[in-house]
Every structure is written in C-alpha cells, then in structure tokens.
Length: 228
Image 1 (spheres, helix red, strand yellow):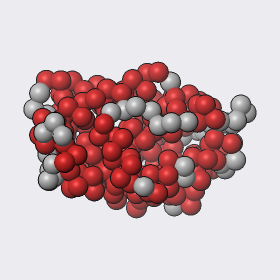
Image 2 (tube, helix red, strand yellow):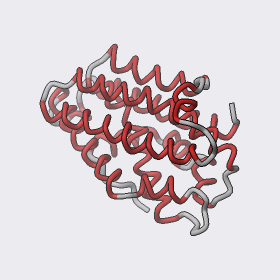
Image 3 (cartoon, rainbow, N blue to C red):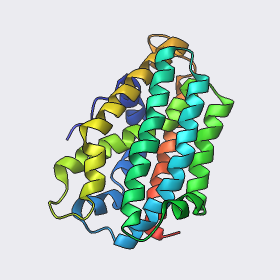
C-alpha cells in the first residue's frame, strides 16, 4: 500500500531516509506482529519499555507547547499529549494488567539503553533547537506508527495475537492525530523556514533530526526482540 498522506514534510523526510525508513517501518518486530510470529515475551518486554518511552515522549510534546509560536501549534501539541497519556498509555496499562503488571510497576520500570538514548535525543533536539527540530525528532514515532498501523491493518493475519495493538494505530482516531500533526508540522516549517521549506538552508539540519530518530526507532524495535 502507498504511504498515508501526513503532509509535505513527512513525505520529504521519509524519502530522504531511504533504507533507514524501511529498516524501521518493516523491522522484523513489526512483521512479527503482522503475521503473528512475534514471541509474546518480546512484545511484553516492548510494552513495558514503550510505556516508559511514552512518559518521556509526552513530556517532549509538552515542550512543543513551550516552543510554539501560534495558538494552533499549542492546541495540536496539547492534543497530542492528551492522545499519548489517555489513549496510548491506557492501551499499555490495559494490556499489561492482563499480564499481571500494574501501572505503578510500568511507571517505575528501568529504562533500557535504547529507550534512554532515543528519548533523551528527542528532548535534546527540542531543548537545543526550535519547534522545527523538535517536530522532526518527534515525527518518526507519531507518523511512523500511523503508517505501520495503517499497513498492518490492511495486511495482518486474521489470527494475529497483536490485533488490538494494530487496531489502535490503524483506527481513525489515531490516523486523525497523524494527519493533524502532519498538517501542523508543515505549517510550523513554513512559518520558520519559508513556504518552500525543503529549499531552506536549515532543511538538511531538520532532516538529519528525522533520520536519526528513525534509526533510534529501529533500535527500539530491536531492543524488543533482544529482550534487553
């Protein structure tokens, strides 16, 4: 299937990543969810680490409120924080409860090195740069999960045990979050870099942010497979 339309910046960044994007969006962990072959213990380990990741990711999106220059930017960043805290994290809590893991245990779980490297990279991008840098570092997760969810929603085996996870990201609610985040990302880049932002001097810098975050996403999947 073709990639979802999440705006001009996402399409350009995705293309610039080349094989790094497929290494993330079609990682063996993802394909294991698609066909149901992913070991349950790998998925459970990933869920715990992803909950910890989402705590830091929500904080990074809260930083986007601080870095915003328009009310629209603030509203989108705040809505994304809400989606992370009240939708994605809720999914993790409900799934892990069935495994006997409480929310308190999730929140207190130690971070894996791959998790720490990724979350701190995103936060550093936001603290040291402007909203363009932060959105570029955030986009591979938000929009990449949207693309992965949409594809797996269309391709996954009917009996995959990961149907609930797939449905959450393939669903219209999350897809709308992605479309809105992509639209506001385009507007933020146009505001700061100009209408033809891909020709701006800073374009390569923000593209490098996206590319590095994409590589760290692939490392996060690998962490799930390696149970470390």
